[in-house]
Length: 328
Image 1 (cartoon, rainbow, N blue to C red):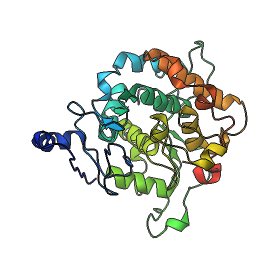
Image 2: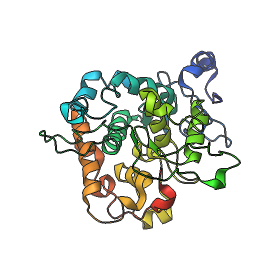
Image 3: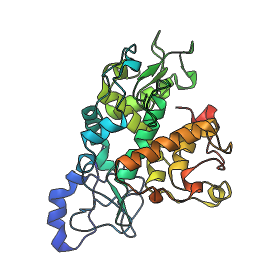
Image 4: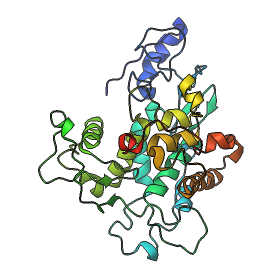
C-alpha cells in the first residue's frame, strides 16, 4: 500500500510529524476513507495525526491491540477450541492468540482496534465485535457442557459442504479462476468467490487466486483475510463493518428511513444481509449478539456502551444488500 501523509500542523510540530508519520500511517487508502482527516483539505489528502501530540477532533489512530488485549482474555473467549469435542477436526490447535495479533498488526495503522473517535477509544469494542463474528462463523455447533457463548468456536477454518466452485466468470479478465480450484468458505471470517480471493490476495500480496489453500495452512493469513473483509465495504458508497462499529459512518436520509445506524447491528447487516437482519427477532442474530456481549464483559467494557437495542440489533434494519450480493 502507498502511504501518504500531509501535515497541517504548526511549524513547531512539522519536524516531529516527519519523524513519526510512518509510525501511524493514516493513509489515503480504502480503509481510512477520511479517518484521520483534520480540517478543510482537498479530496484525497490525509492527515497523519500524531496522536500523542495532537488529538484529531474527529478520528485518530494510536497504539496497538496488545496494549489492552492479552492472551488470557483470548483463552477465556475460546476456552474449548482444543477440547475433546473438537478433537475430530483436523484444525485442532490451528488457531492461537499470536496468529491473531500478528494478523491484526498489518491493519492497526488503518485503525483496526486502534481508533479514537472524538477522543473516545473504540478499539476494545471493535475487537470484541470482530471476534464475536469470528466465533459465530467458525463454530462447530456442538452442544457443549458450558453455558458460555461461542464455546465451540474457532473450530472450523473451512467449510466444503458444497459442490460449487464459486467461480464468477464476470471476473475472468481481472480474477480468472484457476483450473480445478474451488473458492469455497475459508478463513476466520470466511470469504467465497474468485473475486474476493483475488482482492484479498492483492491486498496481502499473497497469490490466493491460484492457492486459496494457503488460508487453510496458516492461521495468521486466515485472520488477515478476515480482517480484510471486516475493513472493506461490500460495495462502493457503503460502509465497512469497521466504520460502523467505531461510529465513524454517518447515515444518510435513506439509511435513516431504513433504520440503519452505526453500531453492532449494522456490522451484521453488512456481513450477512437478509440472512440475519430485517427479520425481526431471530436466533441467528441473538447468538451473534450474545457472543459480543460476553466478549465485552471479558474485556471489561460496560455493556451500556453498545447503545440502545436498535443499535445493538439489526432486527428492524433494511438490509444494505440482499444476501446474493452481500455474501462473502
